[in-house]
Image (cartoon, rainbow, N blue to C red; front, side, top):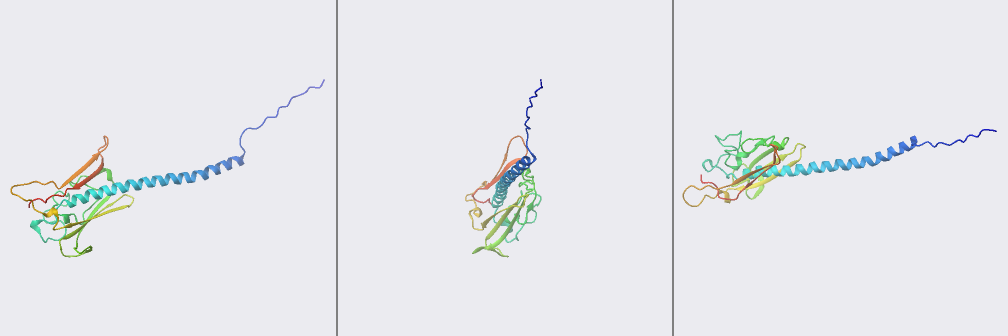
Length: 216
């Protein structure tokens, strides 16, 4: 009697080379826009951080400069820039706004010369100019009672933040205290915020307080 064999057909499980190529192509096409979106998101985040930091750095230095007097009353008529006997390693003894002219530092430092550790790669600079009292855009070579202070903060990537302020010789900060005796006036406050246990300062800011100038 003949012997019968039952043959079972085995189906191969897996993917063909064509299927692998097509799947790889599809994934690749989907991955490109996804990576572009991630890159755009990172660039946007960095730009927003730099925008915030740039404004904070510029604002802090501008408020510091504006707390000083229009000019040293004992050195009226002196040219723009630091006066004789005023140091350049720190800003602690700068007492009029044009002392800040041509000052630049990278990384940024506070008024006492301490590095602001959260802002490595940043640069801050200041210029002060006499300007026409009828046209603050026009820089002039003589004093008409109006100075323009320009503060710039440049990020590590080159993004520039600029603040401009005007200071008048007839402004409220130039009015002498009324009354007799010694009076102390608060003209500027500096704020440094530390986050966590790190020694780095997370935020550094300042504000100039509109008040009478110190008696000379």
